[in-house]
Image 1 (cartoon, rainbow, N blue to C red):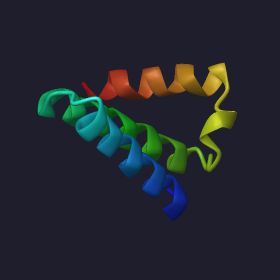
Image 2: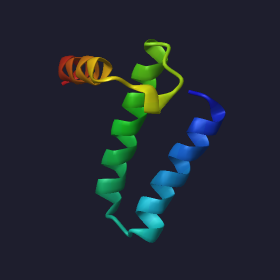
Image 3: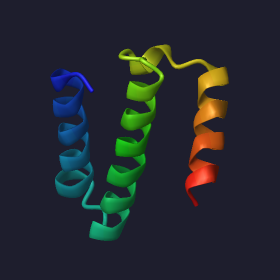
Image 4: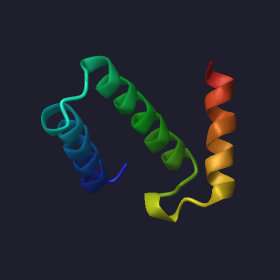
Amino acid sequence: MHPAAREDLDRYLNHLSQERRLSAHTCAGYARDLRHLAAFCDRQERADWPALAARLASALDDDVGRKF
């Protein structure tokens, strides 16, 4: 994951926790899912998250299903 993307992710998680005041369990769930997405994008050599196509989103669903 590009360092700037990591910073964006951390800022978003902080926003959920501090500004939206979501529970620690909810924030942990978001963090886990977003880090899984980041790892998936790295494996797919996709650095630009907004460019994720429906095909890749479907592949992510398949990937997540294999982990659980």
